[in-house]
Length: 125
Image 1: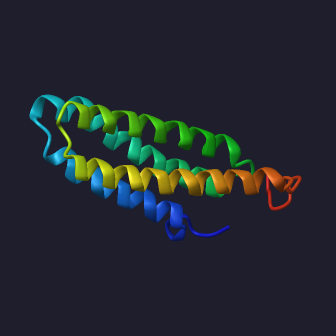
Image 2 (image 1 turned 120 degrees about the vertical axis):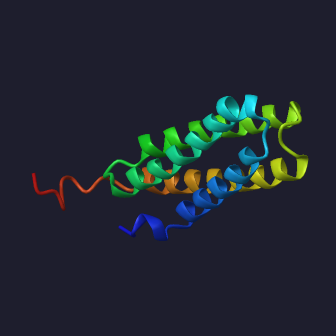
């Protein structure tokens, strides 16, 4: 098990959080507390799910939830762009990052589904 902060998916999620923070900073106040805050919280939750998946014996539920939250982020970003709260270039950059995270999460999920669980090895309960 690698340290979660060294995983490429964690670094990509952090980069997305960094991008989203800049995007939300430029939103009008009315939307900053609703759409902007929700996007930021979802990005933080994705980072937590990367950690949980990294330490869990069964990674699939955490990765499935991560992929679901990624869809929520993409939806909110799209809404922000449609309402002209987010510049098209910022939207495109954020979507590139969500696509990268999604591909990594799907690959990780598929690789863990092919491997059997270790039947309690490494547990000390």
